[in-house]
Length: 72
Image (cartoon, rainbow, N blue to C red; front, side, top):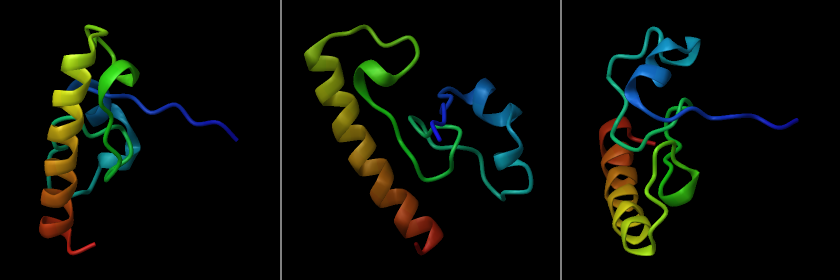
């Protein structure tokens, strides 16, 4: 079954997945906690390689932060 993940603070907070969690979503985190998006898959991306590379490196840092904060 295919699933669509929404990115962006407003979209993420509207979903039931985030209700009851003790934190706000991290930058680049999708509507599924712990799943991050970068590059062309993001809504509103500018479709440039340099931007995608930068977002990818941000996503890696945020994954490490997510693991450290949640203990997963």
